[in-house]
Length: 281
Figure 1 (tube, helix red, strand yellow):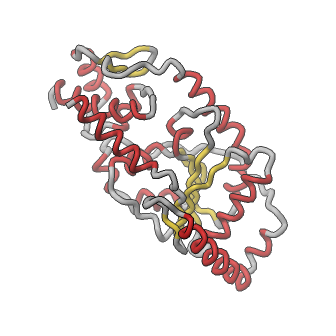
Figure 2 (cartoon, one colour):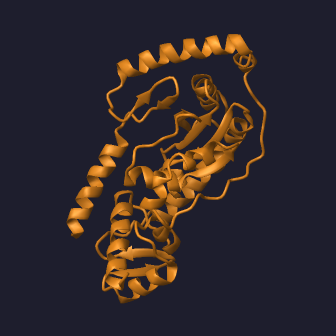
Figure 3 (cartoon, one colour):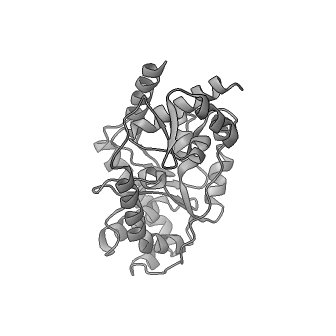
């Protein structure tokens, strides 16, 4: 691939990151590149480009405004993650959770003062709605749970994602916290991501100590027959309630998936992304 073609591929990544006012390192650009490449090839293309440069370890383009608050946004993301680690340790210790990962802005390495910490939770089959109840309880009741946002809880047997550049980049930026085959299964069920982002690989596990600090009612949830009855009751009433109030086509509420994307984030980002591509074409 020529330097000009590599430059175009870099421009596409920076168009994407500009939507979030995000700046990427050369490694970050490579991870998000849609064509097979290398760090050396990127460096050569940037050196030859009239509008690309590397400043303070991030790749910049004259086509986009520099985010003067970027460092502060990074610091906030780290603070929010640190504040949430204690509740993530509780969720990580739950044997019914087979996969746990940080998603969204914090996973990308930046956040706002009023932002939260989005998490993906993967459960054993038949545990989605009980685990969701536990996560929400912890988020509301634990002293350090206020930032926790369990907006995606999925059964390990329902991990197929719709193919899109949005889905691929979201999946490859997550920070795994626990993988009792849940996160591994997520990637196994979505091998198409490797074709969309050929240079990306799963991030290293964020190793947190497990902390067992559950509410008393959680023991009841684990009683075999009674627990299953509660799961059916909780899922039926919540699915009905959430579907009735939902205004987003992206939100999914079923027995095996609770994806509360009520702000139509994917649709909005893809629209802005297409506009950004048109602007540089």
